[in-house]
Length: 124
Image (cartoon, rainbow, N blue to C red; front, side, top):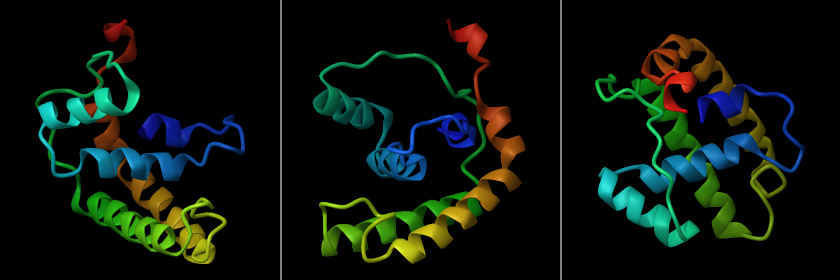
């Protein structure tokens, strides 16, 4: 997810931070088996590929806090109007500010994210 957020040539229809939150929300509080069941239920299948090292440190607290704030905003938006994405909903201004804060927090923690990723060439 960190790699996706750092890319710039995605179409405007892909709200990267929105999908980061959806993924985080899907995984948060679940063990691997529960998470994989949810993915299979949602997408019909699952391709397992190691993306993170097994001996990684816990998610830094400032990253977790930023993600939790985004989840709260996402829920507020959903409670008001589920037909529009958060960037266009009633909390669009808050969403834009949150995205800036998230980018700052992720950039500050770049070394952490790089250190926990399996090198892509070793995966394929």
